[in-house]
Image 1 (cartoon, rainbow, N blue to C red):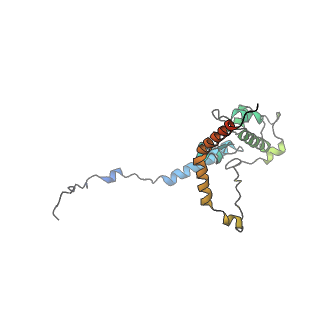
Image 2 (cartoon, rainbow, N blue to C red):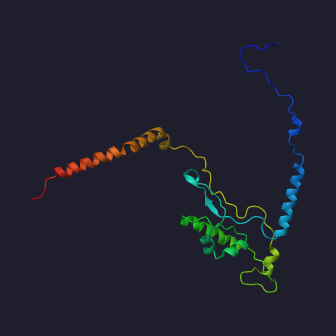
Image 3 (cartoon, helix red, strand yellow):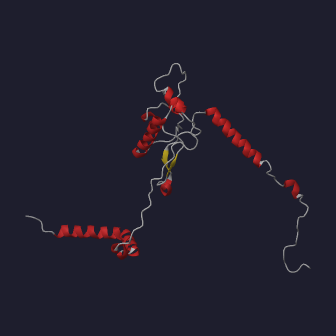
Length: 213
C-alpha cells in the first residue's frame, strides 16, 4: 500500500534484540522458601518471646482521618513512666518506644497507659539467673506455661456495632432532609447580617428609652 497524505512515516524498529532485555523471575519460589526459612530461624532465636512488639493506640493525622484509630510507632516516655516501666525495661519487655511522639490528649494518654498495664499483667518475665530470681520475675509455674505468641500483640478491637433493622417512624417520614439542609445553609449564610440587625435594633431601643430623672 502506497504512502498517502501528510501522516507519520512508518519507522518500525524490528532489530532491538528484545530477548537480551527481558527480565525473568524464575527465582521467585526459592526466594519465598528462603524468606520463610529466615522467619522460622528468627522465631527460634527469640523464643519464647513474641515475634512482634507491643504498639500504642494512636489517631491518624489530619481532620479527614482523625476519627480512625490505628497502631502507632511506639509509646511515649510519659506513657511508659506512668505504667511503671523504665525505657530500658520497656525495650527488654518487647514494647516499642517512640522518642518523637508527644501526648496532646489526656484521653489517649490514659488509653495507652491502660494498654501497657494490661500487657504487663499478661507478661511472663524470665529471670536472668534461674537460681537467683529478682523482684518482678515470674514464678517457675508461670515460666512452664509460656508459649511463643505469633501475630499482632493485643490487636485493636472494632467497637462499632451495626444498628438493628427497625420500622421507620411517622416523624422520620415527615422529616425533610432537603428542607433541613436548606434552612441550615440559610442560617449559616445570614447569621452575620441578622446579628448586625439585632445589635442595631438593641442600640436604637436603648437610645429611645427615656432616661430617669
